[in-house]
Image 1: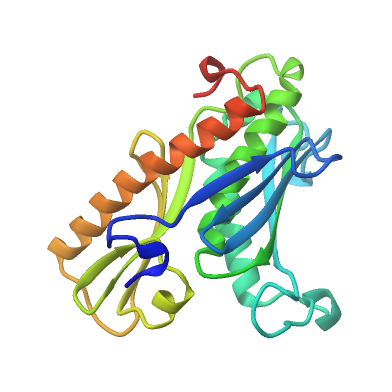
Image 2: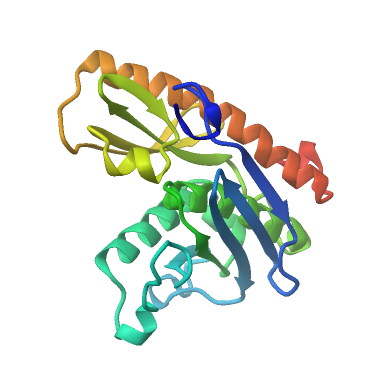
Length: 245
């Protein structure tokens, strides 16, 4: 039996609490089953040196796993003096994914920074960070909407994992499933069904065209459900539905 007594095609319960912190322009606590990630967004009137004078903005992301997020305490990366390869990979994924939601010239010469801090991990931390990061980013843009001549937010973005274990296609893997998976895939998609990123790997097996098609189809159905959770969270915070892409 899967966690939360769910079927193979079902996600874990997803909740998004907006306004989780006071000082950020946008903040959420996203819970995907037992995985919990705090996502904050800040808007700053500056851009990286390579964009100065070009009249467009930027988005960057940072990701961290807090020491108490897993069953055994992990040392802070700052204490070790450098980020792990995994951390760098994940924050680049978050940044790429959320930049796909923006029209950079509409930002002007401003930067949105997304910080994703995992406070409890049970699989799917990177996909939860993308999903929650999009909501935090949307809140940031909504709060500062009077600054923009046109709408910077042009797409909805959500992410989740799918995989194959013992010939079963499973949606939204928890840690136990992910640690023994045969095929692992992380997907980032727009709300209207386009792909932003596909990361698929045969961990302990291979997969056919038919199996891949099934994974993609189940992922699309799940993304549509997650999108509704994102919209409801934003509406609960006072964001107008007609304002959203």
